[in-house]
Length: 197
Ligand SMILES: [Zn+2]
Ligand SMILES: [Zn+2]
Figure 1: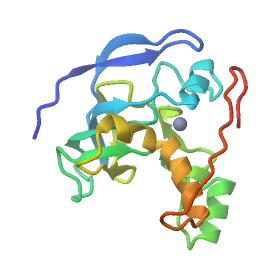
Figure 2: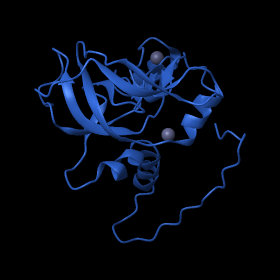
Figure 3: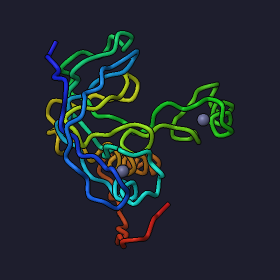
Figure 4: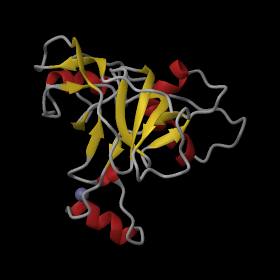
């Protein structure tokens, strides 16, 4: 087991539209099936800017970044045995579907009782809503919301794949593109104050 210190540095949003503050806060201990990830890289997404503006009504103080990657530092007592300390992982942002909202019920009815946090009205989103993200030395996730990062992929390249990369990948899958085929990617210019929601 790698030893985990008591405290860590974290960039905290204390008030909407005010700069992050570099603070020292306690490192949470992983409970149940939670996983503590030691952050190696965490990227800044347009959504982080919306969190900063207050668009998600995030509870403050809050640590942003939903595009974190790193290594597992500690595991909760009930975490899946497929993970071990030192594994290179990325942290997925959508977590903990409630199972009882209309959208969860709709998804379950369509998918043999399964739930998908992306469609839940009461979901947790690490780094956006109800849970701290990766602008810190460590963050908590859980065993079902992390994915392996291949050894050959540098952390700083893996980080943006956790959100923007997933979005692109889904589009490529849905287009059923064959290996070697040409793809056109329209690029929309981002304007401050305009939210594409
Ligand atoms: Zn729900
Ligand atoms: Zn994002």
